[in-house]
Image 1 (cartoon, rainbow, N blue to C red):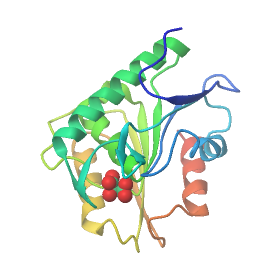
Image 2: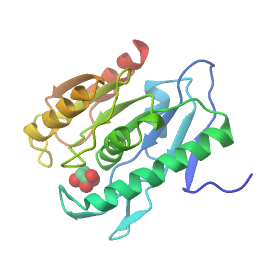
Image 3: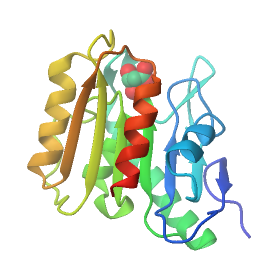
Length: 203
Ligand code: MLT
């Protein structure tokens, strides 16, 4: 098999009929970070976990930012397309259905960008601590896609109105969005994992 276009980890499904998960780490993470979380929330699913190609002071990310919370939107678009192409390659190589993204922070933001730019790529998404990735997103039809957004009420990086705006954008495009604001900061809590696990059980 020819090497795929992103460094990644792939864990085959343990039980049939579960949608695969596309695991997207936060800034400074890598392809190993979310494997345990993925196994926990969707125990039998195949896991596909790429490493972001952008380096910020040596820390992998999925797109360039100009400052914390200020994105290079041209790069967001180019990188979302590049990642969507990787998902298509990996689906063919591993024989996978369209995955559900499970993204944290920067990984959640690229997942949100892929949803609006390349909606065919994802069957749905879990966006943990996401913010609006594109200020002027194209019109997209997300009918039939389920999205779980978990935000932190005490998140110092993401203003509450920003995550609500993303939820409204996705909902306006037809996605079925469940947005819950947890008594948490930017980091993930046990509650994130248990709510995500329940969401997968009820898909
Ligand atoms: C981003 O850059 O995507 C967000 O600021 C979240 C982060 O990665 O810190």
